[in-house]
Image (tube, rainbow, N blue to C red):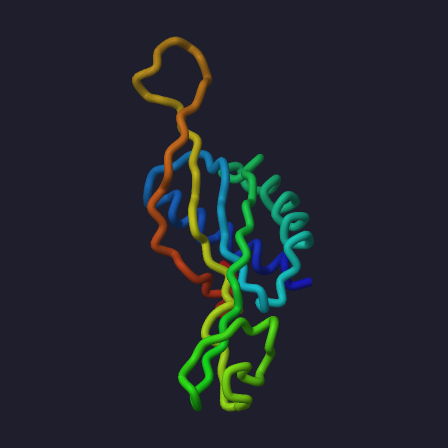
Length: 146
C-alpha cells in the first residue's frame, strides 16, 4: 500500500509550509489526485486519518481530494485527449505516438489553517480560518523520508 507513503510526503510538505508561515494547527488540506496516479482515494483517506493522529499539527485535519483528469498528447496530430477514455491510441488520428501530459500527479492545492485570533481576549477558543499560500505543487516522493 503506497498510499501511506504518499500521505507521509504530503504531511512532510504541509509541515514545511506550516513552519514557514508560523502555523500551529492545520484544519484541512486539499490535494489534486491524478486519475492515473495509481493512488486509491479511499485508502489514502484511511492512511491520512491514521497518520494525522500521530502529528500534533495535523490532529483532526480533513483531507479533501479533487480528481485531476488524465490528458494524453498525440505527437502526430498535435491534439490532446482524455487518457482514461481512449488510452494510448489517439481518437483523432489513430496514432499510438502519444504520451501522458498530466494525470499521474499528486499536488497539494490548498492548506487551510486554524489559528486563534491574537487580539481576542474573550477567553473564547473560537478560531479564525486562514488560507496559507502554498508553493509546494507536486510532491517529491522520490527521496528518503527524514
